[in-house]
Each structure stands twice: as structure tokens, then as C-alpha cells.
Image (cartoon, rainbow over all chains, first blue to last red; front, side, top):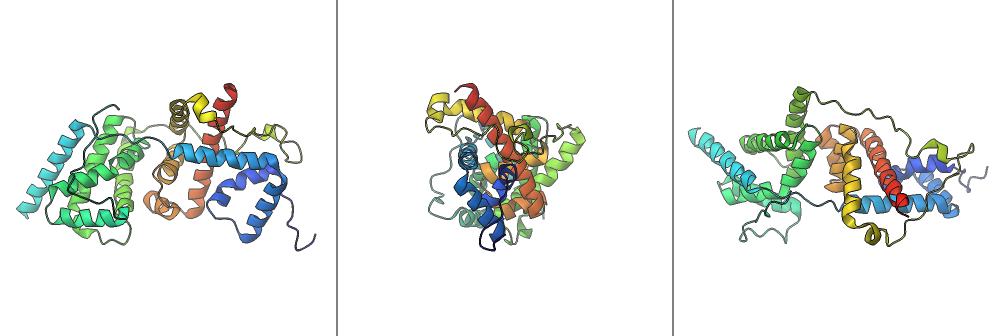
Length: 88
Length: 216
């Protein structure tokens, strides 16, 4: 095994490294092996692409709004706290 | 929830600030007794808090209670906040403590985490190479299926996750916290956080793949 050529990792292992790769948590050596594999594997490239797409869609979940009832309740929480503070 | 949108008072302008700086400014105003600042702060963080609370407790109503208790706790402890973490991280950590004790009282049982592999092992051959490889998703998938249906799929997958997995995915991928902040909020080691994130993300991808291929 040459020092310059990273050892091959199988696809089944690559998919388990995807999160560490995206989170920047792979060692330099593992990152090289990972990228080397991707460069020659359209399936794992498609997998990574799907994962990126999944993350994009997940990041777009719409916020829930504060209901008027909740707004009123938060007003009460604030008032309660002010009272406590005033009583100090 | 199709309730009217919560309006932030116009004269509290924080949009030009970094969110963390904006929070600190609002906190200063709150400390000096500014109720509008409180309402603005609640509005900024409510959604993240409610969603996170929902991962620990059984019902929406209980989650709302947890969020309210958290804010009361936050107000009471406001002078103890020293700014060593971001306000959001601090808020969410308080929330997790409250939600955990409430969630335990409710004794909710979660589905066990059986899917340990990112991808079903039967999709690989003996050498570990793909035998049933993923198909690239076309750019048009969102238009074809509709954003709402993909969103429902993601929500359903999130709902089916074990509690900690869901909490990690929500905080990291929906709320966009940094991974070190997620660790702080949920009291996890970085390695644990990544394992949970990995399982959660793998599950979401699988759910979308299944949905997309079913309609291909």
C-alpha cells in the first residue's frame, strides 16, 4: 500500500461517514479517503447529494407562530415577575 | 397552526444586528424593565423552544406549559446570566431541564432505536459496494411533489425518532445551532451528538427517498 494512495473504503462504510464529513469531524486522512472514494463512485456521490438536499429541506420547516392566547399568557408571566421583583 | 402572526413592535430594531448581539441588547432592556423587550425576546425564541419541548412531552399543551415555565425561570434567573454562552443556548438548556422532568412525569415511551445502519444493509453486496444504489433526485422533485408534501414527510420522520435523536436534529438542522451549542443544550459529548445526528439525518434521507421513489 502506497503512502500516497489512500486505502479504499467500501460504500457501506462511506455512508456511515457522511455526517462526520459534513460536520467537519473527519481526520485529514479519513477525509482524503472519503473524497477519494467519492471521486470514483457516482452512487455515493448521489447519496451525499441526497443528504445535502435532505438537510436543505429540513432547514426550511416553517416556524409556528405565537397564538394570541400565548401572547396574553406571556404578558401575565411578565407581570408576575415584575411583581416578584418589586416585592424584593 | 393557523393563528395570526405575532407582531414584533416596530420600534425595537434588531434586524441589523447579529442575532446574539440583538439578544443581548434585548436582555439589557429587559433588565431595565422593558416589557416590549420581553415580548420581542419571546417571539424570537418561541418556535425553537416549543419544538424542542415537543420532543420531550406528550402534547402540544404540555409543551406550551414547559415553555412558559422556562420563561418564568429565565426572568427569575436573569441576573445570573453572565453571557458565557449565547442567550439562546442558555434558554434552551433551561428548557431541556424543565422538559425532562415534565417528560419523565408523563412517562412517555419512545420507539426504540432499532435502525442503527444509515442504509439498509441489504442494499450492499458482500464487498460493501452498492447493489441497490440511490438514484439522483432530479431538481424538479420539489415542484413535482410539492414542498408541503416533502415537509409532511420530514415531520413524520421526526415524530418517529427517539427523543434525543429528534432533539439533536431539531436543534442542529432546523434551528441551526452550532454543534457545540447542541452539546451544551442537551448535555452531550461531541461524539454522542454526531452519532445521534447521523442516525437522525440518515432516517430523514431514507424517508424522503422512499417518498420520492414511490412517486417516480
